[in-house]
Image (cartoon, rainbow, N blue to C red; front, side, top):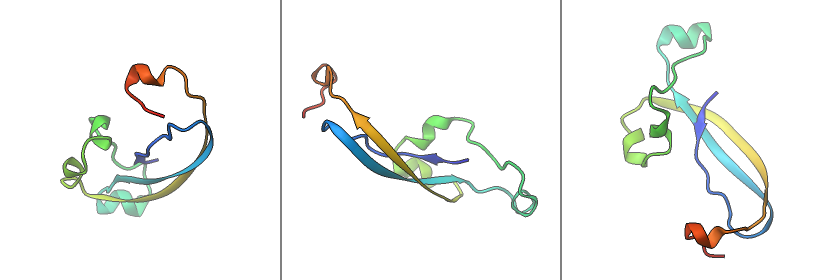
Length: 82
């Protein structure tokens, strides 16, 4: 498992988005045994600014490819311009 952040397109249609993921780096023992590993106590730090994440010891967790179907509805209400 891991954490990642990507932008959802605002243009209508089908989109393929690749999200780079990362996870907190566990201790030497956790990595050796392959246990579940550490998790963030406050998951919101995953979507906070990159500056907040620089304090964490992390490692790559791979990428996730998402196929999204975007149907714009009431987006102007939330300040999204098409």
